Length: 241
Image 1: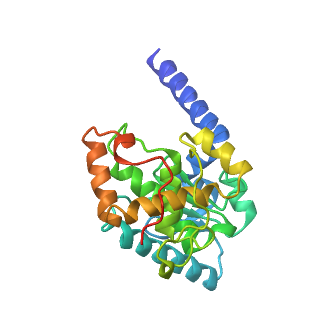
Image 2: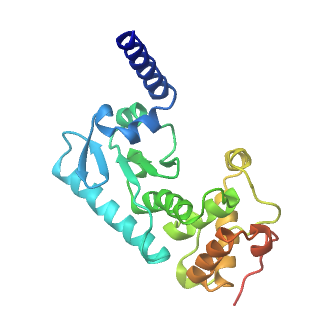
């Protein structure tokens, strides 16, 4: 009887694992990269097999530069996301990727597509992981702040003016910004300036709150039970000198 019960349980577990892999391949791939044809290039970094020497070097350089960018803003990282890097569209589709350049999975790992193999995209997604690793369980920030901060941390030239400009905003917000993920996806899908508007709001808030130290203080207050609404203005912030 126990043998039959154990066999039945094993069958159910196998079915459950297969179901998760079929429904959420990105989650399964980050849990078991080797199951999706990826091999470890360096600790925590996985990519396709049979890469050329130049492709391997490009991945190493991109990851190192992205990690430097995260540390340069946050200080010593508290997160160590597993990175899954694809240099072909077939690989990215196999691990559950869509049309995005890169994506953070469950705020613990990052997947990069062939179009996202650069320092900006890698550090953008890694910023999401780092921020959430620093927030206590149950503490959340609005999606516009999370995304805008990732743009600032990654120093994305698509949405920010050069640092020498002082005020780096390209498109100041004129109204409320998306709070939930659902609202963000809807807004960003319709308005290409959503990232720029959010980055502007975050950039100006940081400039008026001692930059990185202001963010670290905000995280401390939120983790202590503070309210995001009472700490960060959602009204458009004018540029500072």
